[in-house]
Length: 130
Image (tube, rainbow, N blue to C red; front, side, top):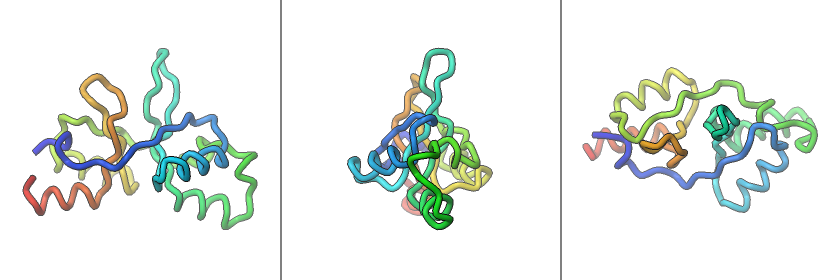
């Protein structure tokens, strides 16, 4: 089974140079718990990783840092290698486990961000045999 058919979460993207406060506004407006952090390479926006609301709470709020003064790229610890919609579910699980994160950006066959897939999404797909 390919992850292109696994239900993916709604996706919000933000440039790595945007402030953490801006990322929080995007998460609130889009009603999502994580954002795909992008960066410009060769004139294209490509995913650099994912930052979650939990990352912001534990790395910024809990230590009383100013979210307006830090960029979202400042708290992007482990860049995740994106999955492709053509990847198998086991391949995506391996990639996610290797990244140490909770979710992966998923790229469509053209290399554009198509969504986010979480470990929970992938495990459910394995159990359901979708």
